Amino acid sequence: MHMRFTDDELLTLSEMLTLACWATYWNHKPGADEGVARFDDMLEKILSRLQHNGQGQRVEMDPERQRLRLRKDREDGSFHAQCYDEMRNEVFWEELTARLAERELGKRHGVEKINSMPEEERKKLAEPLMKRFWEEFSQKGITNLHVVARPSDG
Image (cartoon, rainbow, N blue to C red; front, side, top):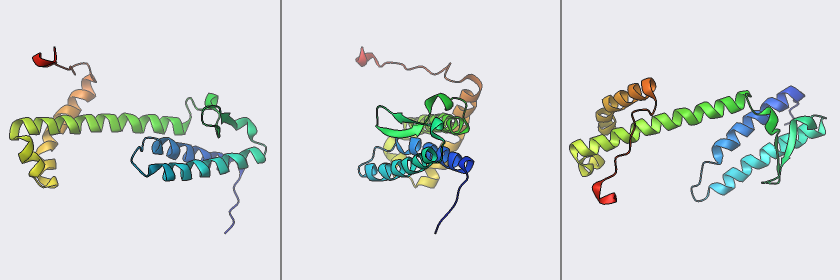
């Protein structure tokens, strides 16, 4: 199958693949390197096509990775960079509220009991705690978040 793309469509595709590649870089599980490389290779192919089509001003060589990338100076404010920042922000807050809720459940009911519960039951118990943390963080960010050292930690 052959597909024809305009330069604007290739640029959009390269932005989509850049976003996908940025997401894959966070995958450090064993065996992930092959998948990350496949994404990188596809992005490289699209960026090479952009260069070949006379759009080289939109592409540059990443000196650290020795691979093509979209120009860094055009990234700021770009849609794909905004999407990535928003995704990371959402993941951070969701993960923080979920982990704090799990910690609270462990304190209230015991870690062993919580870990032995079916996932649905555990989620149901955690939901009001997550909602409370979410409301707190939505209103005040991390202002009221403190780390309290145990006396044994010095």
